[in-house]
Length: 577
Image (cartoon, rainbow, N blue to C red; front, side, top):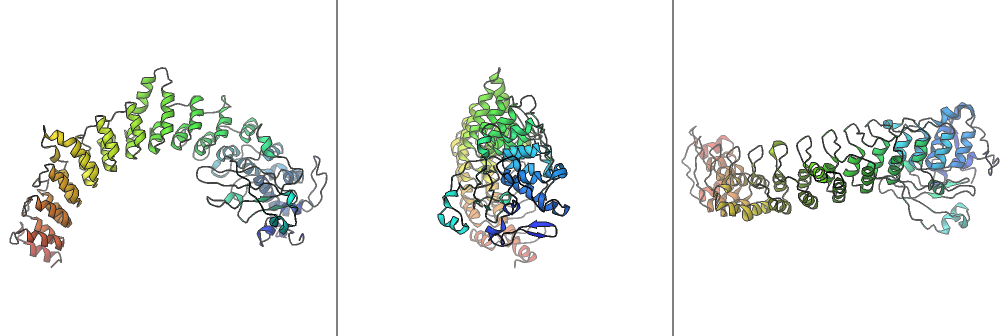
């Protein structure tokens, strides 16, 4: 078996076998050919690794040992680097990462110490300008359950089942990536064919590891000292920024790495907690956006500014409300209440406006976060404060179709007659987007009362003189049109073009809407400024069913427009004969 597992030396490089998984992953075991003093401080020498031709294979092996936490074989390789040690130990791989980046990423503290003590650069700039400290802060470790392995697995390998150790999974996703510390084998390592640093979400096939007798548990060591803490004490730049301007603290806050965050914040004299990245986003912004409540708590206790602004002028509260992170919003308010002038601070928080003049309430309403909206209103958020283009919270609630939030806003004195930059009310927006339930609420619960003193409110016009009924007709919302008509909407109202709701419905081919309007006594042959009728419009655009309906209601086929065309002439002219 040993012969079949011998690594191939091709073109000056050691290469893995391309066979099965068992053969293809055994590399380092074959390098330990001279056992040396395995129990002491002098690992064995590696024959065949002193020539320049073997440099690439040696570099890859260093990265592999760092990635796997293989302290024993790392010592062997470092001992054989001799005069080239500093150059080789800081070599970048094809992913622009050094061995120290990998050891830090997978939280192998003992390997990190070994590399640093051997000359590894703690400031090494890798892919996207990330340092080893960035990696240590970004990737958090999580405990995993042991997996039972049958005796058959070990029979196939010719091993004693009593040598079995626990099996772990390494998993990474868009929120966090973890690595369970496990000493690597001295004599044998077996894994699947998927590289540990390319495991995607759902790839949960674990790596089988048989640990040698002289290995030391890194988990025991990390209880006393962390990779983050160690690197900083070795003068790693705690405020180093990547190409996006993000520091290790940004990484910890974004990924929810509470341990790394706590370690970084322990260096209070050095850490910059207020620094923003290229978008002005601070660690507190990131924690608020991703709902990492404990990290936000740590940052606030360390003095993070509740009112810090990114380049969009958004505060952490803006970000928390955008995502509907209720617990985060509560935490931010709790810390705001601790300030000397608590009421002033809370008022400042809820009233803060971003670059488009949007408040936290705008964000929460627009994304239908009911509980957050409720809490903001309890904190006296201004319900009638518009953002850019005079968009009010009620407009946003109406457009999203969220009746509960509409009701909540109105109960807190939201103005239903407020108009946006297009002179449209919330009722206009709801009608245009066919939000029937919202329209019913606005009309049935509110407008009906107002009609007693202002009968024109249901017929309010936008900048183009369209009433809500015009918009309902234009978009074919026949049920909504019926609701509006029942509440007193003017079926004969004319817009800027002198079109009635029937003109709009006929031009778009909305047969059901036309029928609703006609049944409510809509004029059949109204003419606009060009003497165009609904029948002319339906004929022009080829809406045969609407033409039939209008004829059933005795539409006049003899009427001509300003150019002398009747309905037949317009149909022929537009190839609808």
